Image (tube, rainbow, N blue to C red; front, side):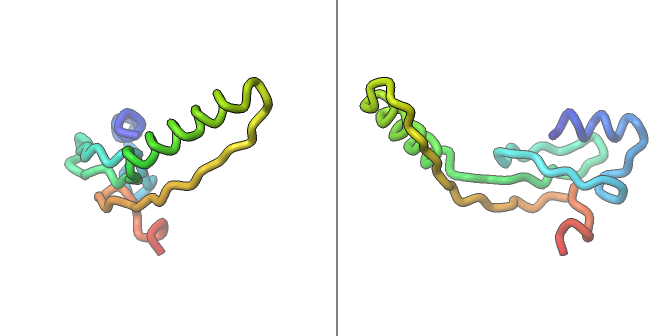
Length: 88
Protein backbone atom coordinates (compact mmCIF):
# COMPACT_ATOMS: atom_id res chain seq x y z
CA UNK A 1 0.00 0.00 0.00
CA UNK A 2 2.91 2.33 0.68
CA UNK A 3 4.20 2.01 -2.89
CA UNK A 4 0.69 2.45 -4.28
CA UNK A 5 0.25 5.54 -2.13
CA UNK A 6 3.54 7.03 -3.31
CA UNK A 7 2.61 6.36 -6.93
CA UNK A 8 -0.79 7.99 -6.47
CA UNK A 9 0.82 11.01 -4.84
CA UNK A 10 3.34 11.29 -7.68
CA UNK A 11 0.41 11.45 -10.10
CA UNK A 12 -1.23 14.24 -8.15
CA UNK A 13 -3.90 12.17 -6.41
CA UNK A 14 -4.74 13.57 -2.98
CA UNK A 15 -4.83 10.98 -0.20
CA UNK A 16 -7.35 10.72 1.49
CA UNK A 17 -9.34 13.52 -0.16
CA UNK A 18 -9.60 11.74 -3.52
CA UNK A 19 -8.61 8.19 -2.65
CA UNK A 20 -8.61 6.27 0.64
CA UNK A 21 -5.77 3.84 1.20
CA UNK A 22 -5.47 0.97 3.71
CA UNK A 23 -2.41 -1.22 4.11
CA UNK A 24 -1.78 -4.46 5.93
CA UNK A 25 0.33 -5.61 8.89
CA UNK A 26 0.32 -2.29 10.78
CA UNK A 27 3.88 -1.45 9.77
CA UNK A 28 3.56 2.23 10.73
CA UNK A 29 4.53 3.57 7.31
CA UNK A 30 4.33 7.31 6.69
CA UNK A 31 3.78 8.56 3.14
CA UNK A 32 5.79 11.39 1.62
CA UNK A 33 2.83 13.71 2.24
CA UNK A 34 3.36 13.11 5.99
CA UNK A 35 0.25 10.98 6.50
CA UNK A 36 0.56 7.73 8.46
CA UNK A 37 -0.90 4.79 6.55
CA UNK A 38 -4.14 3.40 7.97
CA UNK A 39 -3.77 -0.38 8.15
CA UNK A 40 -5.31 -3.71 9.08
CA UNK A 41 -3.72 -5.53 12.00
CA UNK A 42 -4.04 -9.14 13.11
CA UNK A 43 -2.23 -11.56 15.42
CA UNK A 44 0.73 -12.96 13.49
CA UNK A 45 1.25 -15.51 16.28
CA UNK A 46 -2.31 -16.83 15.93
CA UNK A 47 -1.99 -16.86 12.13
CA UNK A 48 1.18 -18.95 12.43
CA UNK A 49 -0.42 -21.36 14.91
CA UNK A 50 -3.41 -21.86 12.61
CA UNK A 51 -1.14 -22.40 9.61
CA UNK A 52 0.82 -25.03 11.55
CA UNK A 53 -2.37 -26.85 12.54
CA UNK A 54 -3.59 -26.80 8.95
CA UNK A 55 -0.27 -28.12 7.69
CA UNK A 56 -0.37 -30.93 10.23
CA UNK A 57 -3.92 -31.78 9.16
CA UNK A 58 -2.80 -31.91 5.53
CA UNK A 59 0.08 -34.25 6.42
CA UNK A 60 -2.25 -36.49 8.43
CA UNK A 61 -4.77 -36.65 5.55
CA UNK A 62 -2.28 -38.75 3.53
CA UNK A 63 -3.05 -37.19 0.18
CA UNK A 64 -6.79 -36.84 0.67
CA UNK A 65 -8.29 -33.46 -0.18
CA UNK A 66 -8.94 -31.55 3.02
CA UNK A 67 -11.19 -28.50 3.04
CA UNK A 68 -9.90 -26.04 5.62
CA UNK A 69 -10.56 -22.47 6.63
CA UNK A 70 -9.83 -20.24 9.56
CA UNK A 71 -10.85 -16.84 10.79
CA UNK A 72 -8.57 -14.38 12.53
CA UNK A 73 -9.86 -11.25 14.21
CA UNK A 74 -8.62 -8.06 12.55
CA UNK A 75 -8.59 -4.49 13.73
CA UNK A 76 -8.16 -1.23 11.86
CA UNK A 77 -5.16 0.73 13.06
CA UNK A 78 -6.06 4.38 12.50
CA UNK A 79 -3.82 6.47 10.35
CA UNK A 80 -4.53 9.43 8.14
CA UNK A 81 -5.13 7.85 4.73
CA UNK A 82 -8.85 7.11 4.89
CA UNK A 83 -11.42 9.76 4.02
CA UNK A 84 -14.54 10.38 6.09
CA UNK A 85 -16.87 8.65 3.61
CA UNK A 86 -14.95 5.37 4.05
CA UNK A 87 -15.23 5.54 7.84
CA UNK A 88 -19.00 6.13 8.07
